[in-house]
Length: 320
Image (cartoon, rainbow, N blue to C red; front, side, top):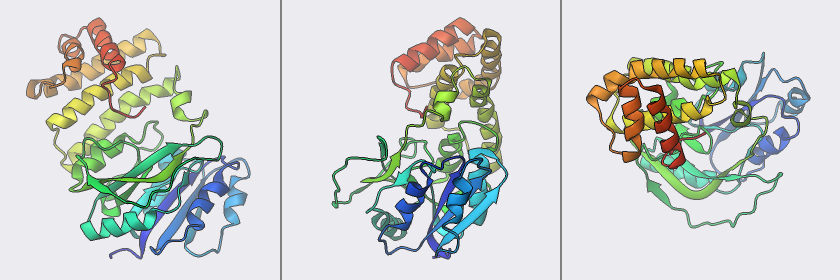
């Protein structure tokens, strides 16, 4: 072990007075053998969240940080600066960890020197989930391009975040997982046990983004990630190229509520960085053909048709 703890759990909190106790208690009340610490970041909350978090001050293996509001990325980054564990997990403050499987996950991660393990996630209804507890643990190695792009519901080897941070001030920050974290992994495993209960939040970005000018972050984030890939020496592969086409269609969907001139600008900017890649790669997915053609010919209508075709085919395997 190189870290003081086996696992640091980072919980960014902003105006979650209704849920934050349940979230923190889901980790604190577990009976586990592994050495877990909870890093709680109050990201400038304006409700009672900060006071509730302070009730946990002084308890064993709890670190509390209060900071001015920096958004989800800024809060996660503040937590990453404090990490002193071999593995790290991100837990959103309106979700919770499901009891029973953390020991098994960490034991396997150490024994096989695993980079990432992702467990099953379930959507919460109210504060309750129905699930059958299953102690027949199974770990299956998965292709890095088949893993989900969520930051939550996984444990990561902490060293994967050396020289990597979440893009502060941007929406859709989980984009870094597929492009900056997973390409640098040797071993990614899926775990058949449930570890994460996820709350469908109507204040969340998936809801807020429709028609909001901030949804343009979906495009700018791609440019930031491209720059970071170069700095980290991550090459574009055939698999990453295919994922980028899926992501172009997803960006089209995310920005579909914006004015036409904005959508056309995104198209021309996308075509500019896409064309050099298209000289090196051709997609193996037949649903990509129309979208590729639209970008190659700089034809907005063909591109829009291609995005619609791809999205409606449900071939796109990226996270909204």
